[in-house]
Amino acid sequence: MAKKITDENGNTYVQKKPFYKRVWFWILAIIVIILISSLSGGSKSDDSAKKVDDNKTTKSAGSSSAKSQSQQTFKVGETAEYKGVQFKVNKVDFSNGDPDVDTPDSGKQYVVMNVTISNNGDDKYDYNPYDFKLDDNGNQTDTTEVTSGIKDTLNSGTLAKGASVTGNLVGQANTSDKLKLIYNGNIFSKKEHVVFELN
Image (tube, one colour):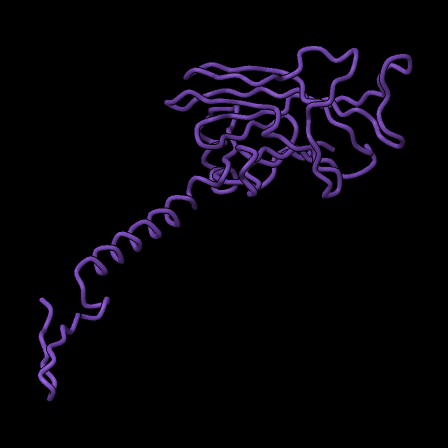
């Protein structure tokens, strides 16, 4: 409650409580603390990709479980799982295109990455080629190049639980450089979630 004060001239003033002594301030502070702790605690476990062992033998799983629980980078042929979705770069090919129709930029080749995405989560999964970037020594470009002779390109779509899709992602790069395929999750995410070394 507000406190009434009368000065020596007979004027009456209402003295209000400071904001930090009010109930609404403490309720708001508790809600903010809970939100911050839940966001910072939940994101650590979700932002690590795990290697999926194709050999389901208990001996190999026991000997490599510490190493393969979470990884930063994967190789061609390895399967990475991130938030219930598995990614695998099946193979990588290089092409100079068709000189009569299309050619890559000077000093570059088309990099064709055959990728399989499998949804092992409980919810539907939306995939998009813009979720991937081709990293050429730190220069990250889209994997949506269109070139003749490359069929079965990966388009956008939705995978139901248990479904998978295989398609080609195409980019341009200097093939003598260190190349990586980076899955970001979506175009608004800055954190690298799954990285495949291509050479």
